Image (cartoon, rainbow, N blue to C red; front, side, top):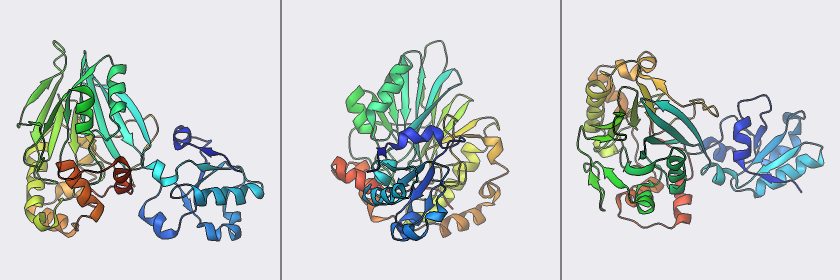
Length: 362
């Protein structure tokens, strides 16, 4: 019987010469909806006739939704002499797979936490004995461990906006740490928190002058906020991505949200210096992610390659509005949970989060 291995064992190999061949045996519609970058789709029912499409000189990692079809596919391949293993937990596990990159920026230690299967990015910013977290996912223990590794305790937690595609870990992290949870009251949060005010600054280390500054940035949602680490980095949430800009999040308010997003980009973001690093809350499937490398670009690199940033307002609004669709049903429940209006079990959360993010304008 083929062995099962965790996807975390393979992540460091993805970009190197020993990268495994990722064989996804789900049906084509499942694969088209959500897949691991670089995976090749051969449905299980076609695999007996298509083994010639599988390389014999590489290790094979077989993937399905949760593991049962992958086990059948790996067994078939092993019987024909292939080196095949099963990815433990399938795409369900891929949705909960993380890696981290830590760098020094603006006098602070910044750790980018990448939730690989969701395209979600969150951040721990530490200096001295204090740390703040931006856009935490539900795995709260991970952020505590990262802060402690820098010799810091988490004092503040921020969400850049009311998330729709994944569950925020802000409340869970507050329970675990006692940190102050700061949110923009222009989004409908129905539980206790400390409101973010435009321009508020959180000093991390006395004498180091590392500050995290909030800048109100409506557009993706009414309460969207970007956070700035001095002149070094801008944590843009779903306002500006590396491949596009944020999608207006409500179909029935698409035009006013698109106008607000245009003003945010042109009045709050684009006037900043070219060398400031853009650190978003998501990345799309076309953005390459390399193990051990920070996922970021400088603002000056984005100006010439994102056509939306050069559009006049009316063209920008028309372009953005054309992209907007109603939220999927699972997004509606995630919004209600993140707002404090719905209780979900961990199993229900896991099921509703499955799938890619759809926060950027394609």
